[in-house]
Image (cartoon, rainbow, N blue to C red; front, side, top):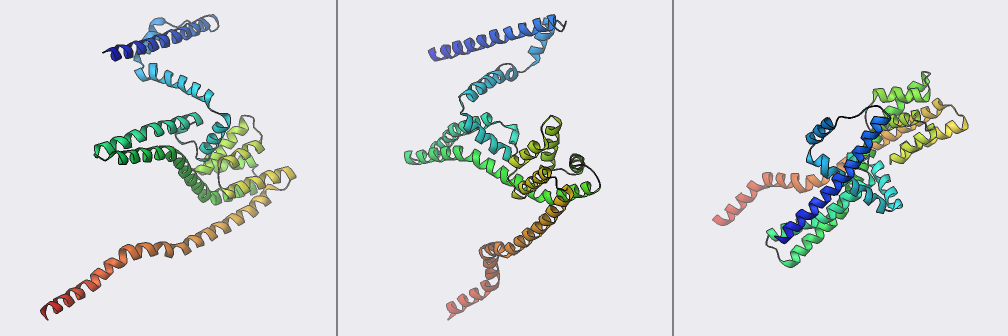
Length: 307
């Protein structure tokens, strides 16, 4: 009973501090609107809108945002930069930031050992087995988020590599038709969808916001872990720096990319028989042996029994 009253007291104190803090902010906003914008908000309307909001929006979400701010202040800058780079390569899944990813990793490290340990207890395993379950949960919680990012990065790179030859051909044709580089990229992203189209669209938006073309294209090179795309962007930047015709560079690059795609297809075709060998040996051949040799073996057994 004492612990219950202590919990209620602490919860009410935190809730009171939260109300006082946000009441001050609301008062400041109302005064700014009244003096600068000549718009005085109606307290009844504000109170009604607050009542319509859920408990999560009014209480849990602000506390979580405050916790994220404090956690970000304590997070080392180099660690945050490394995680941010990994998230960019993975395409920022779920819109996560470096702080969100670190929180997810810590929660996984804490929660998964408890789940695995509880599962071991439900199985009535021994103490040693429960400890092994907890260690397995700890390792899984530590490794799983990074493995998820690696998987997303590989999938994103594979999609970009598959899309690149067609996008490069369209870009070359658009430049040969007389369009500028930015207009050609805009034409390409209007016709295509996918990883590369999204990255080039982001590149154009960054150029419109004030970045130079070199900085925007370098951003694509940093966000994609594909050697061909990085080589293409490096060639474009080099051609722009030296004043070489962009059409000539892209035509040569397009021929090389098509040749590399042909070589990758041939390589995949040559790997197919080796990959088919293991299912044949493990699943298909035993079934054939049973169907073909099974009746003969049964007849031999019956013959030896009768003799």
